[in-house]
Image 1 (cartoon, rainbow, N blue to C red):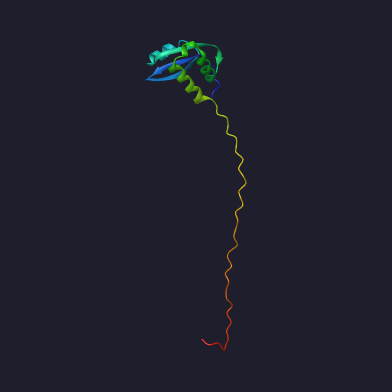
Image 2: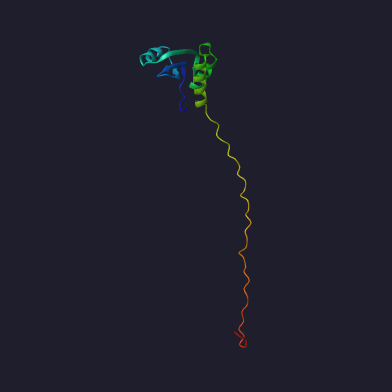
Length: 119
């Protein structure tokens, strides 16, 4: 995540049939979500101001979010937003030496001219 914002309220809501994790600093956010057409709005006050990822991890353990839909929504958010560890560079093996064949030497017959030779 690109920001260091802190939140004191987190939860989930449903908009157009899709559940998403929501973050705010005031429970009154429910009014705004309701006006925007959200359904099944569930927000919880957090003990302290935390980042989005920490808030989502906290939601997983709260009783209000133990149903399958909430757990799935929150788990998906955590998976998508957990920083990925940089891949360790794999040491490449030294390139194998290829056997190089010397160019083929063709035998040539030595031609000599004999003046006395018949055709």
